[in-house]
Amino acid sequence: MRFGVCTSPDKLPLLEAAGYDYFEFNFSKLATMSEEEFANLRRKVDASPLKAETYNGFFPGDMPLYNGCDLDRIAAYCAVGFSRAEQLGGKIAVLGSGKARSFPEGYDPAEGAAQFVRILRVCGDAAARHGMMIAIEPLRACECGYINTVADGLAVCRAADHPAVRVLADFFHIYSSGESYDAIEAAGNMLIHVHLARPNDDRAIPTAADLDACRPWADLLRRVGYDARISLEGSMKPDFETAITAVWPVLEMFAE
Image 1: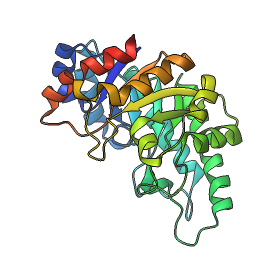
Image 2: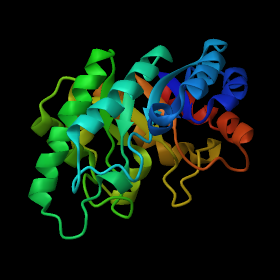
Image 3: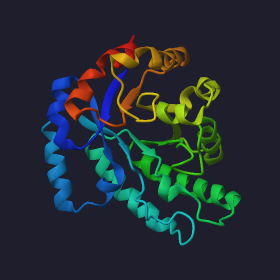
Image 4: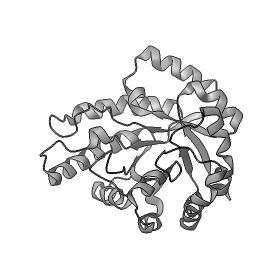
């Protein structure tokens, strides 16, 4: 199992000292920054043993995916983003992007679902050209009205039928939606990434006090044979350094 944190490269020294394997950066920031900004970012990453293996924040909130969608624009955006991600050691880009992914008011859900599949195939082609994968992230209903469970994510993966498009399990969203573990147990190799925050509405990073609450998740991943990456994505309480250190008893449980 490899462990990482959703954060910026400025935190790399703290992650190195705490024993992490990688960090998870924001894809939309990467894809839209200037060449000078990217050069500065690459220098920071090149100087660290930790790479940006995974990415969240795939689309900016104002990227039109339905009304006014331009697939050529999306392809060009992905070409830049995945090219840069590959240079930083990228392997997986998480497609959550609840604001962009939500259907506009009055939009036909069937057409929205068909359009999202078209977008996934464009994005999947770009990811594959750079040796990367896309993980669809199910989000709780208050963040997005479309793809709220791992079962939903798997259904969309099957509809897209693209070798570079798979699914993510975010245990905070699973807790929030009350989804059973059936879909995760049935996912097989379609599950390629995991996000972790504790099962509590504060969405904080777990500590040793949360061992019992998180144990069913660790048992589940062990049962399905998942042994890839887990990224911490949540509130860093009481501060970043304390949170990424205090979580280790929980991560060690996942690694057993």
